[in-house]
Amino acid sequence: MPPKRANNKMHSAATNDVVSNDDEETKPISLKGATKKGKPDDTASEKQEAKTKAATKKKASPKKKKVATKKEATPKKRKSKSTTATTSTSADSDDEDSTTNTKKSSPKKKAKAADHQRWTERTPLTRLWDPKTAMKSKGSYTFTVISWNVAGLRAFIKKEPDALANLAERYQADVICLQEHKLQDSHMDDPKLKIREHFEEKLEGFDCHWSYSMTKKGYSGTAMFIRKRGGGGSGEGDASKKGKKQAKIGAFFTSKNKDDGEAAKKDSIGDVPAKNLQPLNVVTELGFPKHDGEGRTITAEFPLFYLTNVYVPNSGQKLERLGYRTEEWDTDFLNKMLQLKKSKPVIWLGDLNVAHNEKDTWNEGAKHLAKSAGTTPQERASFDRQLGAGFVDAFRHLHRDAMGHYSYWSQRAGNREPNKGLRLDYFICSKDLMEDNDSQKAVVRDSYMIPDLVGSDHCPIVLEIEMKK
Image (cartoon, rainbow, N blue to C red; front, side, top):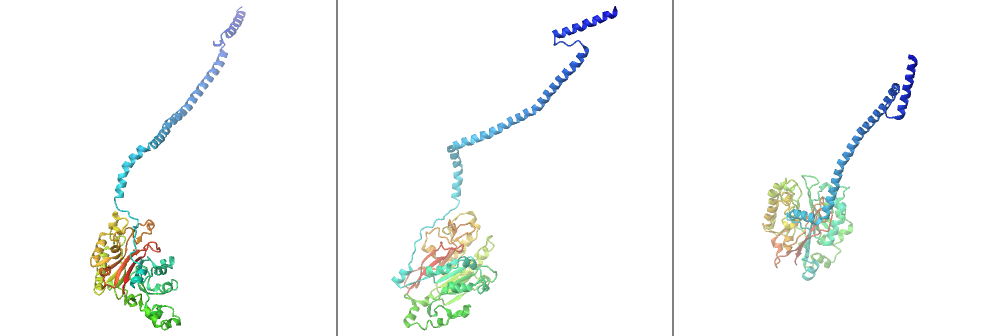
C-alpha cells in the first residue's frame, strides 16, 4: 500500500543516514536540518578565528614595525658605541693623535708666545747707597724723598691709617709727596672725616702743603709733607694758620730752655747745614691758568735744588685727552722746569702716566698698548723730548738693566701678585745732580720702588740724595 511503502522507505533512509554518519565522520550530514544548524556554527567560528588571527597579525605588525624601529635604532646605539669604541681607540692611540695635535697647535702657541714679551720677574736690585755709613764715613746727610699715588686719600687712610707714618719712620723720609688724593679744601676740617687731625697726629713732625682740583670735585690733587727742621721745634708756632689745636704752653719755651750746644746741633745734621734741608718757598700752582685748576703740582724750592711734585694728566680710556696731554701739558710743564733749571738743578717726581719703554712694561709689544693711555707712541715720544732737554730718569740711569720693577698694577685685573705691571712713577733730575764732583753739594745716589707696601694700585718710590758737608 502506498502509504505503508512510503513509511518503510523513510525509515530505511533514516537508518542508512545514521550508519553513514558512523562510518564517515568527515562527510556532511544528510539530514538537511542538522546540516543547516551545524555548518553555520562551524563556519562562524572559523571566520571568527580567521578574523582574530588577522587582527592579531595587524596588531602584531606595528609591533614588528616598532621592533624594526628598535632595530633601526640599534645601529644608532651601535654607532654611538662604535664612536665610543673609536674614542677609546683614539685614547689608546694617544701617542699618534697627540703628536699630530701637538704638531698642529705648537706653531700657534709659538706664534702667541712670540707676539709680545711677558716679563714678570724682578731682577735683583742692588742698593747703591747706605745713609748710615755715609754719615759716619763722610759726614754727609742722605735727603730721602718718597713719592706715592694713593688713588684717593680718604679710602687710603681708612684702609691703612698708619701707612704713611710707618713709611716716614722706616725710610727716615725728609719729604713725602702724594698724588691723586681727590680731596677738596672743605674736607680738611670736616668733623666727620677729620683729615687734618689725622695728619697732625700721624705726621706731626711734618709741614703739610695741599693743592686741590677746583674744576672737578673728587679728582686729582697733590700733597707734599716736608720734615720740620731748626729752632721751630715741632712747628706748633704756626698752629693758627693751619687750623691746628692751640699748643700747650710748654711748647713755646722748648727752644729757649735748650743750651747753646743743643741749639748748635739744630743748625746742622752731621756736617750738613740744616738750612740746606729746609724749603725757602712752596708754591701750589704751575703758573698756567689752563692747567692749575686741577691741582696737579706743588713746587718746593730748597737751597740746592727745586723739587716739584706732579700728577701728570691721564690721556683717558678713549685717549680723549691725548692731544691736551702731549701738545699742551707736556710742553708747558717742560718749559716751566727749564725756567727753574736756569737758577738751580731741578727734580720733578710723581705719577707721570707714561711707561717709557719695554723695560717699564710687562707686556711690551701687545697690540693694545699703542692705543692705551700711558703707552701710546705720542706719550712716549713726548717723554723722550722732555728727557732730551737735559734731564735724567734717575732709576733707569742708576739701574740700567733692571727688569720687572714696576710701580703700578691693575687691581681690576688682579695683576699685582703676578707682577704684571707698568712703571708710571719717576724721579726726573737735572743731569747736574747725577754728577759727583767737588763743586756739587747734592748728588743723587739711589732710586728704587717699595712693591710690598700696599694701600693703592701704585707703590711708593724712593730717591736718596747725598747732601754733602
